[in-house]
Amino acid sequence: MTEANATNSIGVVKLRLRLPEEALRRHREAVRIAQQIGDRSTLIVALRNIGNVYRELERHDEATESHKEALALSRETHSKALETEILDELGRTQYRLGRFQEAYANHQLALAAGRQIGNAYQIAQAQSGMAAAAGALRRTDEARRLWTESLEYFAVHGRSEADEIRRCLAAL
Image (tube, rainbow, N blue to C red; front, side, top):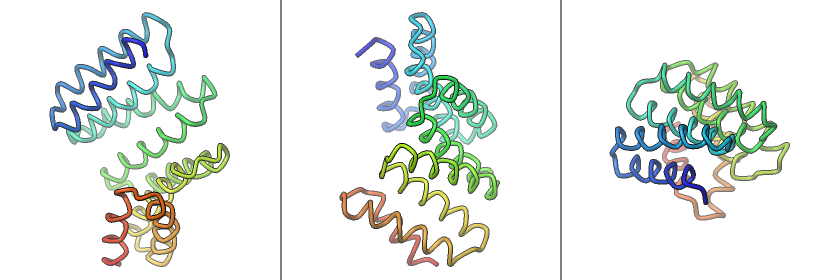
């Protein structure tokens, strides 16, 4: 593990500890280190994480900008796995902004990319994001179908997301 990876990981922990400013500082440091050593994968992950911190701070425009920068780099490097994750994060940010159609479209792209690389977790994440956006757009049948499909994966794998999806389904 490189110093940039370790610094990025510390940032993730700091956000989980509800220390977003410290997380942001660590992720920015990871960007600087990754740029110095030419580690584009870590750079992409750090930019994605910066976007996630901004989203938690409700600085959605900055979150969108960081996610879009990470997305562009993931496409330049042909990293479909990172592209899938970033599209999902961008969809979450758009959802928080109330841009439900944009959120749906980004999750739909994440779903296609997840299927292309055969990543069942990312597929379920994208379906869940699409379901939330569909629900906000009052397309309840579609939301129910998508949440039910994603629940199958999360429940079988004992993921915490299953409980949240069950609550969403119950609220429909």
